[in-house]
Length: 279
Image (cartoon, rainbow, N blue to C red; front, side, top):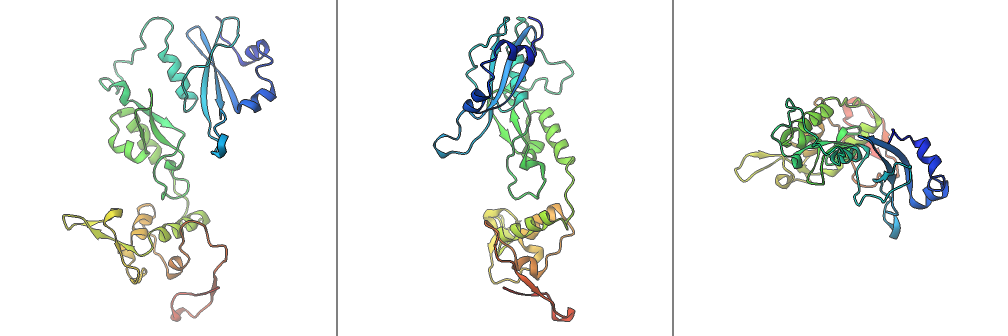
């Protein structure tokens, strides 16, 4: 079969692509994948995922397209994205010849179940600053669903050299927003709120530890005077090394729903110390 196009497929199946059908089935977009004489329709769909009050989520489905451009039965598998669809189609090589990796591939000797790739799906790092790539990217297994890793974990521990390099490149390419950016300032106050009263602790070997399970809760400690051992400040400085919190930062810190009533700063003389807050 010659290379199929979306125009040809829609012309051969006018009823299939009606707007009402698209809305009913929850489809968002369609793509044609041509590979070694065969064509496939990839459809991004929600598939009634929001039935029963659940949140709507999208995935991809595949259908083979016959030589006469009619639709085949949907493949019994869900795909994360279009690249995932393409990889699966390649695995169904119609020529009868196995798809071989180049001899120079860094994956030589790495079992396929360990292969990973970047996926536009966030994982881990919920306390990372705004714009951090882990909010939107992760490393997922190429074949099946054998692994799912955050970029940071994959950059250090992935058994696939290509996935490890891709994760490191994605992290290295991130440029943090300025410390003065309103989004960053709000993030700072949330981190300080999340770690309110929490300070560095000791592990079982009596070594200093920033692990959450080892932190000490000291609600009466002055967070400004003890900022160098404050868990929230420690995390923020991992991304903004020059960060120096003020009393105001700790007073407006929150976690969860942002306070709806704004705090007004009362101007004071410089020698009077940090601003006093009133409601």
